[in-house]
Image (cartoon, rainbow, N blue to C red; front, side):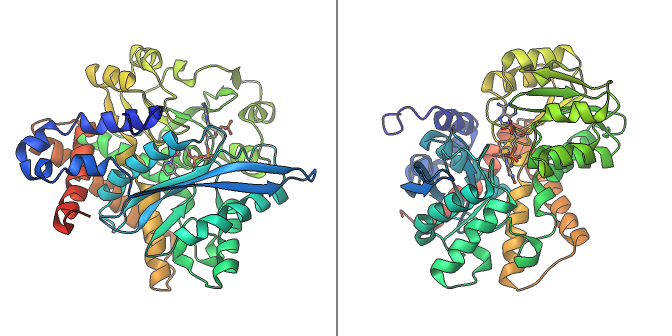
Length: 434
Ligand code: NDP
């Protein structure tokens, strides 16, 4: 705590993992002897840097950039960049820590890291976004490489930003090193299905949870919070599997559309016009309701997929959802449910999957992008989606088997933490004290 003062989200993420590990340290005392837990909580490297850039009015702006290279026992550091005004070291470290275990669960050769900036892209012109990305990469490039550290997108960083970042990396290094960033455009080294992967993967995972109980998405009412990358493609896959997403949100409020969200319209509003969810209402018709500043979790549904941001679903919201007959929660975002909310779900017997398992499809498909870059190959959408589905089904199986093995059947939280931890810990043990 002394070493990580004020980093509240990081403390929360560490507690959440360590709480699950007592049966592991009892079974494997060698982890304690080698101080694996202390070592795994300390990032291998933390980089903080100034990002100066000039806005459209000619004013010099200063932001702070971060890259936390958390753990490379299983492969090069891998994890997204977040551009949002709330970003500070505590958020980057929480995300990096989660990423280590998530990446281990995918069974792909990738370590964990995370980065970003307190830059707020909202209301900025395209030219401002480009100048910011170029300045950010002008410092970060020296820490990256396909065998070293491979960033991707996250909140506020999509295909446009990855393009500007990659362009600057290529210019500075004079290398067309495709494998240094993932989330690239399809014509310049990107992978089919990467844009869809986190949302689709979350729904594949939820489908497996339902299947294990003899159920399916058919006829289920679903809430999806957020309306960004993860939320949009989670919605698309729910609809393909026969469920109906009846509400989505952004930081201004939520919309309820009992006929089912019209995804083409939502994508036009969010992806093309870069508008607010409230703009959806005017275009869709009078049966749709917009609740400004309200909580989407007030809407009765069978399934909740929180796909916006950390700590967006608290104990009160969880109690409301349970009272309304909720059956399942799968986290598309990172740590969207507070620990008290998770406890409410688990106590009430609601099926609950943590983000490090349920949203691992994004990073897994990033690893598939790296594989295609390394072999100078391009796979079809169908093949890549099939691989993603297979990976998510495999993670579900691993998590449940691990929970069984440690005498806590059906506990997806402990199963994911233990399975992720042991893979990283075993690699660290094998490599000695480094
Ligand atoms: P985006 O920036 O594309 O979308 C984020 C969405 O969440 C926006 O609609 C945003 O609304 C909304 N949002 C943010 N804060 C709040 C809030 N307090 N209440 C309601 N809505 C809010 O990001 P992504 O979709 O990429 O990421 C979403 C989550 O998924 C994050 O936790 C991220 O770490 C996680 N994730 C993403 C992966 C990926 O591949 N992209 C991979 C794994 C996890 P507004 O526009 O108003 O801010």
